[in-house]
Every structure is written in C-alpha cells, then in structure tokens.
Picture 1: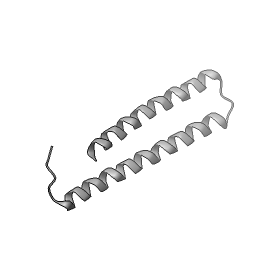
Picture 2: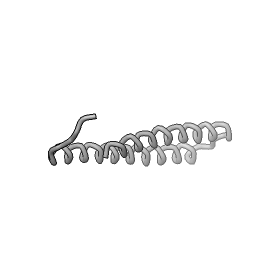
Picture 3: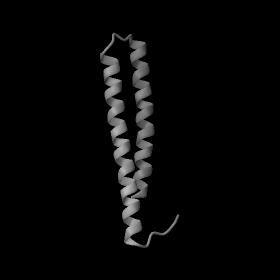
Amino acid sequence: MRRITSPEERRKDYNDATNNYDLSRNLTITLLIVTIKGTLNEYTPVSRLRGYITNFEEAMKLTWRSFESIKGCI
C-alpha cells in the first residue's frame, strides 16, 4: 500500500472514493426501483417472485462488498 503524503494526493483519493460511493449508491437505488417495478407491473407466480428476491439479495451482497471496499479507501 502506498503512502499518501501531500494534501493534493489525499484530496484526489478522497474524491475518487466519494465518486465510487455515489456510483454504488445510485446503482443500488436503481436496482431497487427496477426490482420493485418488475415485481409490481406484472402478475408473477410465487416461484418467480422468489427468484426476484433471491437475485436482489445477491445484488445487495455484492453492493455491500463494494461499500466495504470503498469505506476501506477513505
């Protein structure tokens, strides 16, 4: 791991991490909206609804991992 010494480098790293966090947050919100709209717009059998929920849970786990990795950068 490299050592950051100058304020410019710290600012750049902080801005990069903040931009990544915003991107992950927006992606999560979009994913949530698409998942909810997909389940509400059409009649879905219970098995398909379970599939949506499972896929959403997997996506949230991946998103959470990205949050954790970004948090480690700050």
